[in-house]
Image (cartoon, helix red, strand yellow):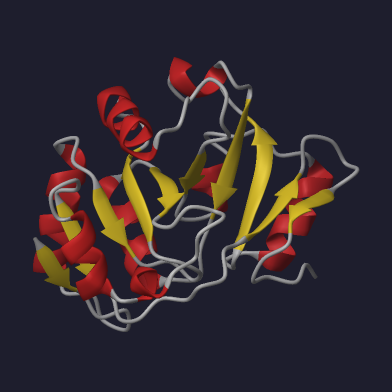
Length: 201
């Protein structure tokens, strides 16, 4: 299913359709402020297992990332030091993934890793979905890190490729090719571990 949502004014009826799929444990592809991504309700363990299987990711060995709607939402699921808070406050919403220690609110599938990537993208569609869902969204890029290809910017082509693997694709217009900048905030010696679209302030 391909659902068109306009970022300036997301239609509540279409947003509700997407949120229902997420609540039911479905997988959804949606735009961010960087590349299109595949996601699910981050607190639904079965959905998390399904997306990890689809992407060939071992959740015990790979970093998992979640999208939160804002700082208060983010601090429920990750531990944020004062220094990390100041850094993130200057740069969010924006094209960054911050690696932080997990809190005890996340399911065990995350805590085995003891760290989680956190995003607050500058994209009204996905932030609206997170707010309406009431939970963070587990997020993974549509493309593989070593394979950024043109189809991954076009929601109609993404739908053609993934319609048998996901439950819904959100058409939020053309996406970008450059992924987020990943910053480790596991201690106060911050480190950019993957340069991407964003430049830290």
